[in-house]
Structure formats: structure tokens, C-alpha cells
Length: 199
Image (cartoon, rainbow, N blue to C red):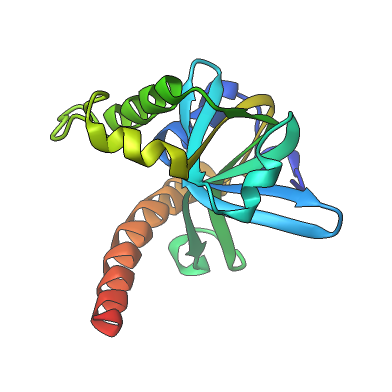
């Protein structure tokens, strides 16, 4: 990523926190001049990231054999109006992103695949655990042949957190409030519009 130093985060734990909180990733590979992009959740198994996609996805051919891969995790982002600052500023956009670069390997063992699905479900269910995926559920056995499971050995984490760091403390505080409020409002408005138009 283009890295102005004041927008770059170098704390690995901060960078990983984006992936932990917003695990739905943009997974990017390239072969010759063709990019392959898939969206899927990635969950930590130790220091590695593990995911599953449809076995018929053409991206599958590049998700093995230690092929290079980049994964993008996007946190909140928003337009920042100069009107929220206490000083005279220009319009900008604030955002929180993490990139994970590394190599990918296919997971083929059916029991390991099922175990990774159970682990992912437990993580995504959160602390309430309203649903528990049973590794012995026979439907899992029928599903495994149609899943491509893979793990990513991350070799580099990069974080770009544009949070109005170059402004005075009062303006940073206002930008933080805007980032929170705009995301809460825009998500609700957008989802309502999409559902109204789609159904």
C-alpha cells in the first residue's frame, strides 16, 4: 500500500485486530495478467489464516502449492466533512485497513476440513454461541467434497489507519466520532435500500 508514515500502523496486534473483528476478507491472487478475487471469511488458526470456498471457484487453482496471496481486511471507513473540524481543513476520507501477504496451501484431510469449519463457526457465533456445529453431523461429510479449504502462512502484515492523525486533538476526536456515527447510520440506510429494491 502507499504508506504515508503518519497513516501507517506498525503495531502487529493492532493490524491483526482488524482481521479478527472484520474477518470477511478480499482474497487476491494473480496468474499472468489475470487477477483472481474472492470474498470469504478467514479465521486465525494460531498464526495462520484458514478459509473455505466453493470447490468450483476458478480461484481454487491458485490457492495451493505455496502460491503468493494477498488478503485485505476492511474496517470502518467514511467521508470526513471539513464542517466537523474546529480548524480550517479540506474534505478527506478516513479508513482502517489491514493487508496480509503470504503463501497459501490447500488442506485436503476431510477431518481437518470439518474441524476448521467447526472452529470458524464457533468464532463467528461469538460469545453467545447460539448455534454449535457438530463435527459428526452427516451433512458435513456430504459437504466436504464441494469445499476447497486452505491455510495462509502470513509473511507480512501491513496496516493503513487514516484517522486524521495530522490534525489537532480536538479534530481527531471529532473525526473519530464521525467515523463511528457515519458507519452506524450508513449501514442501516444502505441495507434498507438494498432490501427494498431487491425483494
